[in-house]
Length: 253
Image 1: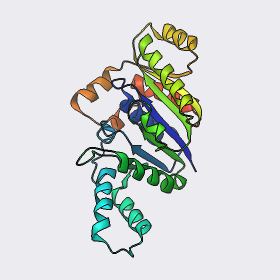
Image 2 (image 1 turned 135 degrees about the vertical axis):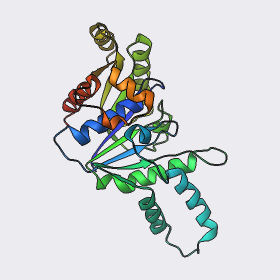
Image 3 (image 1 turned 180 degrees about the horizontal axis):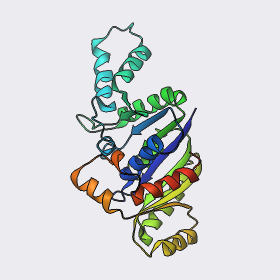
């Protein structure tokens, strides 16, 4: 199995933008080429949009198909073969990476079956890639369901506030409580304002958090977000992109 990285954090911290910039740097700037799978596991996020990917069929669509197949296929049908054929249909092949999108649930809105599908997809696909990057929903409830396998790196995205860092501390403590297996837990502080970096690092150190990156407020990034331009197109001289390049190096990617 390749390296598995999950990105989580409180809503509104720019978690998906950070994920998109991580992928952008790995595709364009890291100097290494990975067989990479990107999973947008947050149904409320827009990672595909942030990357400029036009999402077609999703894991939610696969859910509908697999449920209907119980009534429309022969009892002799090999469900594993059916599963794998549908998986191939929803896999998006982009330049530098493949992508799977969770999508929205149908009907009652329960994600139980979708989460089971995601677990099966992870079991089936992760061994085919060098690197798997997962943009997860806010919080850790999905981890407690064991949807996502053991992790190499768990990245918590937060803002510069003391309350934001405290949220990171709670995520770390919850991960221990649910016995989530990971090798490294890193914090990325997003949208940091000039002159506050040292205080943020001091606050993080005081509660035992390892900050691997402090992404400054970036006017170029803000303009991209405002008009909806894909973050994959951010220029190399963007301060946020340059800081993310440092993060990539620190993670050994």
